[in-house]
Length: 286
Image (tube, rainbow, N blue to C red; front, top):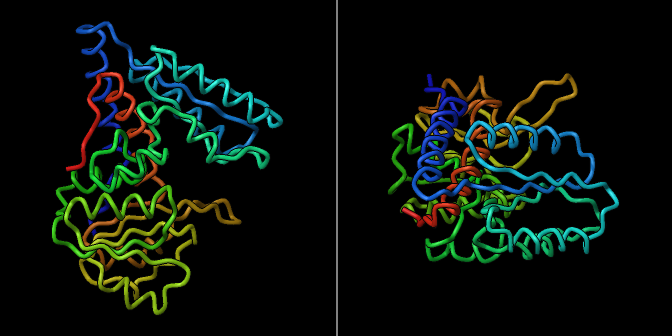
């Protein structure tokens, strides 16, 4: 039976480390890490997520600014706020909560953020520099996945890694991060034929397709490391991942649960990126 990776505990350990370092930075240099968050509209899941981020900033001794804007806020108004925040020396990280209302182009908004303040890691400059292993900020969820494995002493170098899902938020960046860590990487998607033949070759399997419990036990090799990125709300109110947890638990060596696995790491990595920006320590890939 697999070891269940406790993402909630690992994330809390990281947040404790971030708070300690933030307090040292304030004492040593008079700098308080500053994070600005923009929420446009009334998406319930986004509001919950923003509240978690606000609480994490407070617990980590960060300075935070929240912009809760109405659904009909114009793109021009949002860009004006971003320009102001790019100039604000007290703000080291800028996060625009996605999804945005349909009348706003998310690419235009993300590209307006100073890459050094793009703590979500979505700016094309940061994504592009993943190819060289030298981005200012790595996308939070993929970065959190690698941190989960590192802190669980799971080897990456030389392993066969399979990613199910090719989004710009998780699939593509985590593929680059794993390549930079010397894994052999395969990316699967909706056009992949005989998916189970590919997934059974994985020593590390990352499920990020957004399809509830699509990864079944017969798709997983014995002893594989299973990282479940999916968060799916079922009709009965249950949250499930992209992996059939109870089935796969019996075959894997390590597995992340949903909830309590990858999810908490995203906010932890957001604060790590903001702290790095505040301290001038722009990270490099290992």
